[in-house]
Image (cartoon, rainbow, N blue to C red; front, side, top):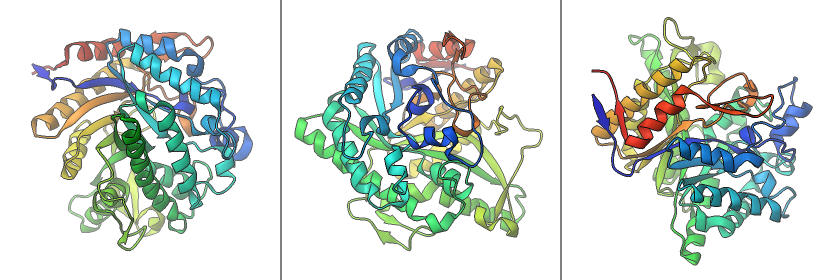
Length: 426
């Protein structure tokens, strides 16, 4: 059976600066790798050397029939010291964007993908309300410098993942476990998104640029461990609200709600998005637990007899359909800005692509306005706290010599992108 996608559908891959560029000692993550954390970590070092090899990487992506690419701009390179912008960094990212246009690939630029300039981290990072001013200044500089080349902007990548990993789990810098005591981090990110949205559109109007603005929201499907348990069903709704919906509802309504605020209105926030970016990887089965109050009175039950990836995440294709259907309530176009599997077995990656795209097509057929799909990732890269072991790339990267070797999954995805069709077995 052949599943046809809408005309003009975008087929691409995604990367982020710190994970692929390499050799950037200006941000907080590099500082953490170099001993700023509580224990030794694998270092990103040269990563994929994409900072120097972006041209050949984009040419390779184009040879695989991709017509778009999502990447991130590294704030710490643009503004290495407070109020001082780097002409060489601005020139570099303009060259990155020109390279994408030269290949006929539509750029989607992310303004912040987890990392912060070290000088901001030293001032408290997202805990400091002053970051709203710093972020506005940075965003304005980016749009002024290369807004003519960016049709799609992502303001912030996975804000709730950042909060939970950094301020609840304590696994990412600044390694805090104070949770709700640091809830202003979430409020500041919500406000920063609204600020960035209006700055981008103001600058676009001044210069007659045309662009749309959204954010990349991580969506994790939650199901009750015991469907007959009212408490398990309750904590599923609680996790779904806090992790998946709170941030999006704030932008939709203009109000930040419990547990971050008590229905607090944020000026100029309501409706401050043109599209939604969906990052989907897995589902969790959760169980009510008094002992896990810091995890919303719930604990994750490890998958039993289900397919998992190399990080132990369940492979659950139906979840991307559930996510798309739920996000459809906001009546905004949706781009799937990340979706992929870390595995050493490329046959599993090929099956992952087919199974998940089948569910995307199902959602489109049911009326969800999905505009494009960005597989994570173009390259095997540096996967944050997990280092280089997880392999997400359609293209294998040999860490010894930086050789790029497309996997069979890359060729499968290339055929889908070329034909705009997905062939599935009946």
